[in-house]
Image 1: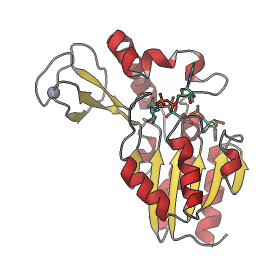
Image 2: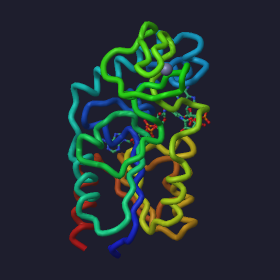
Image 3: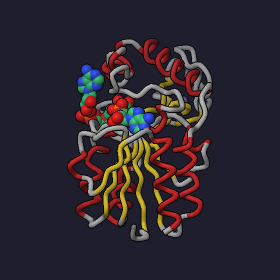
Image 4: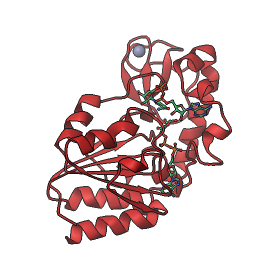
Length: 234
Ligand code: NAD
Ligand code: APR
Ligand code: ZN
């Protein structure tokens, strides 16, 4: 394996699966039980904000009980020891990458332990329950708080920074994502256009599998640490 000079990594729900957080589109995934239009779209929030608060309160409670796994820690180690440019982009709204030591990290779909006030458009950290009586710590408005999560139809965060990194990288690694949702599903093609080597580390081939130069299939907690070890030994 040639030692890269600049790495971009994309992660999805699959990297958190072995920590105990359900993915979205696996057979028993979240979207097989809950209609995503009710809890992951602006229209769903407008129609029934309480339902959306309950969904993200449930997800915050679930994530509070789980730990980062060996795959999260392997990426934290890679960021520490890699001698080059490094960026980790996650579609996940959980905080397991931070808790495993990742710092050069973008949450392109936002974070469920942050809140956005729709009255003053300011963000704040948010742990615990959120409801219609939640008050904005900035402007004091009550009933205007929403999870700071990017829903279907909304623009993800920091796309300029992400595309700049994709066009400059020589290694793109995709971990634990089904390649169903854009723009994240298109990152592999952007990286390839820029001449990067592209690697997929996933339980099974994703929708975008054909665009990767290399692939390893298996549970993230075994294939990701092994991949990082081999790279750092190069
Ligand atoms: P999209 O086209 O990116 O994705 C739509 C996705 O909805 C499809 O890929 C499919 O996987 C999923 N879908 C469709 N029907 C479904 C069903 N019945 N059950 C479960 N999943 C179903 O979505 P879009 O409307 O074009 O929005 C794209 C934007 O929304 C992007 O910016 C993306 O980053 C953002 N986004 C955020 C979230 C989130 O919850 N944070 C989820 C998806 C998309
Ligand atoms: N190890 C590695 N990969 C795994 C594991 C595991 N233990 N378990 C599942 N996977 C893989 C699955 O094979 C699948 O390809 O992780 C992927 C999970 O795909 P999705 O459930 O579609 O999750 P994701 O790709 O992150 O969804 C993208 O859609 O609904 C939105 O906001 C949501 O950000 C999410 C986006
Ligand atoms: Zn406010």
